[in-house]
Length: 278
Image (tube, rainbow, N blue to C red; front, side):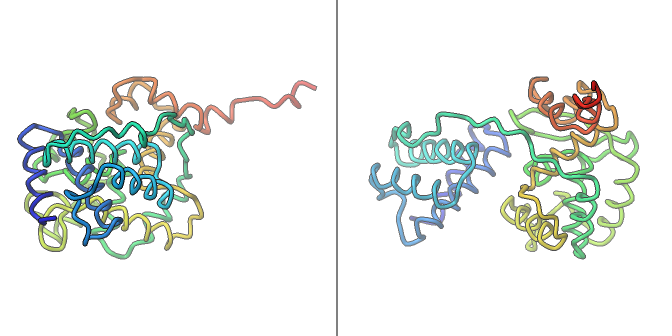
């Protein structure tokens, strides 16, 4: 497969006004899938049955989560339809039952250990910004210098989930950290860039978090998104109104935010034990 194929697919998605987060996610999944099946394999030549078989193998071997599994199918379906004119039926390998696990929450002590584990200033700052603002990984990667308004103490989050923008407060404590980072790295367009000055990749950001998790010795099975969960839960623990947290997170429905009421310490600590009634 010509290496320009993914680039052409990206340009097509941009023309069709897909959100930048969706483009990053789809391209990341497609490249990872191509690496899994082998770069020597031309994806254009894969027969439908072989493609579906590879998906089944990848889901089982990599133990893909429900959402990742679903996004992979969506990315491949769109890719083959737009680039090769093939309308493939992914229903045989599409996940049907969505699990409803509670978010895995880490304590403030664990968060501090994770954030302090990196000696690299850029890596530490990226993870700190995600926790301090409750961002999705794509929202951090897409953040530009001009999205930060220090005078009004606001940060503009553009093209969040559902291609929606939102404005969130800029904490004073974060200003000090970002000022130190800015003076050291002097970013020009995006707040965080790769080694070659290009936009930071989601895969590299995940690696940064995995390294921090290992160095911190926080023995919890969490992903980078766990910092966003921690942000929401820790705010709720301190009594922040759930409706405010909904707006800060950019949730479309209050039902999504209410999930955190099941894991917040404030709620759990107020539940009496039956022993108290004896």
